[in-house]
Every structure is written in structure tokens, then in C-alpha cells.
Image (cartoon, rainbow, N blue to C red; front, side, top):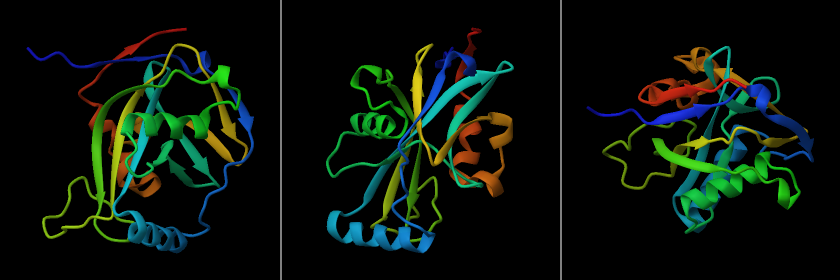
Length: 200
């Protein structure tokens, strides 16, 4: 019998939240972002990015922490790796830059778990696929999603221009219109995990 991997999820109330200086987006529009991606591709080749699935629980149901920019756009914490950077170390660096306090002794204990999804961007367009189309020999981006196991108590410092939301899996499921194809399929990717709901 195959045993499901276990994820301990602690109540949202176990975590404390503060703010830190704003983290401005490098681009003001989707077109700008794709143009910058093209420029970076010419210099460094395929972009590799890593993003974190941070789980908490509310009302005995798993919730995922998402960063909200403006009123509508949500994204997973993470970002682009430096050329040659190790994925796990790069994800820890990105998580600290997005969600850790500036004080070195208040760094969360990021426990990077397994990679649960890989998405490919075949062209300099917004659309991504959970496979690399067969006719594409030079994809422009590879994005990997990792489960990150949180300790029972952590302090998160959220940039002032962003909001950190705890969104239930049932809200994400199949909700492509609101969250896009990558985030809205996370419930399927997590379905093989056993959630150990730990009450506060």
C-alpha cells in the first residue's frame, strides 16, 4: 500500500504578520513584463522560476497563502532564479525577500518540500502549460511549484503595497477566471497529500 505524504497544517492564528517596505513590481504592464522577459532570455537563456505553496488551516480546511497586488491579481510567493542557482536555495532566498522580516534573527524556517508541478511558457506570451508542447525546442520559462512546510509559529513581514491572503482550496478549485491556470489547479496537485490539521 502506498502511503500519502503528510503535510502538517497549523491554524492561521498561530502566525503573526507585520509589514515592511514596499516591494515594487518591476513592470507596470503585462507587455512590459514580456518585453523584459525577452531581453533576459537573450542574455541568460530560459528563465527558471520557483514558487511556494504555503499551507495553513482555517475551519479545518487547508488554505494557501497568496500575495495580492492591487485589487485583483494574486500570485504565489517566489520568483526568478539567478543563472545556475540551486532551486531550493533560490526559493528560500525569494521567500525571505517577499515575506521575512529584515532582521536576521527573525527569518522563518523555510522547509522546502517536494516539487508538485512544473509549468512551461513556450513563447513570450502569458499562457503556460503543464507540459512542454512537442514542437517547442526552446521554451522561454520553466516554473516549478514546491510545497513548503511551515513551522507551528512564524512571523511574516508583508511588503506594504501587497496583501497576504489565506485562500481556501475550495475557492481556488477550477477558478481559472479569478486565479489563472497555475493557481487554480493547486487543489488537484495537493489531492495526494494527507493534511494533518493541527489545532492551536
